[in-house]
Length: 457
Image (cartoon, rainbow, N blue to C red; front, side):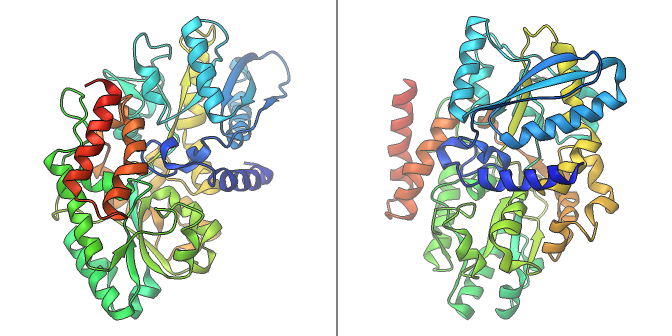
């Protein structure tokens, strides 16, 4: 990849990451590049191609994707001179693009060939007559190396309609320097009880907060809920946020807060411009976040360079099947009615899923690539010149390989109801519980009624 691409990716990605609120994300808080929500500014970019080429119109709300797609399409053209493409890319505001896509699919006019759809919006395009192409045949050659749960969030009835951007595996980021001073060994933390006990010990010795209690995101909450086998909907797809497992998770976190070792953080979650200084200053010792938080450390918490270890998140019981879940995401889809849908699907499978593309996802952005074939390439993952390898005091991919077979997802993420659930939790429910001291069951019952009224249940 060109050096200028690396610089552009980092600059735009970090700027975009500041602009998304909880309600726009699909799993609470930001979502990797899909903090992308609302960050796009109108603009069009056309590739320069020598000779004949098939023109593909591409819509995105992430400006940095334009350059990435262009560079990868150039690679495609070099390797497939008989199937050259010319990308005509349009970058739009988040809501404008999704609304325009919805209208185009409904009317049958004006849709692009290829489009980026944010995870929180994707379920809306999976209802009724689906206007997106089934990409299962194009994904098939890569299937054995892709985390299945990351495909399912862009799927329905066994078919896949979007190419994922990354895994977003939930991991633990430990400030080892702070923990060492408190004589806390993060490698001994295996369960949530261990995590809680370590927090209490840390707080007693330092007077500081161990980890945050989320109020504007559900990163840790979703992880703990999925590990218990819980979700936000019942088996029939109805709102069910008062279920026993949900209550257990939120009450457990309330118990953590009551120890004094866990507290809310400015901005309500770790991935927030208000929260970064608190972590950078050592006011909090641990973050439970998706893997893509690596990029936030290298950009906004630079004082922690060489002081942070990446490790598996706790589980409820050692040996539990669910070790992690994916967080955040953007799916790249192909419009079914496109005259060039088959070629577009083939090209973008290459752009999003090939090993070459996924190497750059790690090199440039620090995201965990969806093609796990690159996870074992130590020349890539342990490259001493890589900024992310330099920053952390463990090899990031060691943790990914340890949890690889246990990365799951919440079933409700594919429901069109989830954005509303996410919005209610991040703006009302969690604040009622962890800021206002409302009883967990009472807060859940109140929010459940609000959501049921919205959906007429």
